[in-house]
Image (cartoon, rainbow, N blue to C red):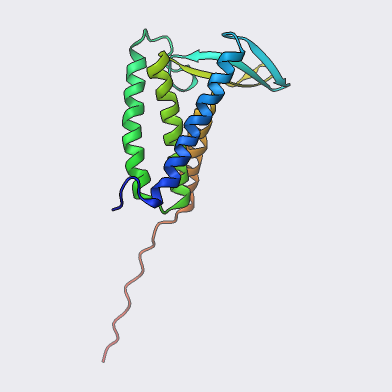
Length: 171
């Protein structure tokens, strides 16, 4: 087993760090540019809107009274430990390592928000007529792409088929 900072791991850790940096730069820009709940139409189906999510994905448990901040922070910290172990184990498997690095960077990006602010900054809002997707951020997008890669990898891997025993020839 190789070290967490072995050459095979470095590019994946840099990618995770890149996700965190991109996530926080975009959150900083939106927070500095927009007032809370202000929406700026960009395309007929896409707007930038500054919202604070105290819950999990799709604002799950957002109105739970505050305990969810530390619960989701703990879940994120535990996920980080698990993801680092999985990344270390699969560092040479490009698709798996890419997926784990994206999820790791996204998870840490949102954990940092929860620790700093008590909420996650969301700002990407897709909508069409009466349909509206909950606002999300770069970290959420990285987690989603990483999860999709993991599903794709799981569907592409074929189980090793048992070979029938070779018959013994009689003398």
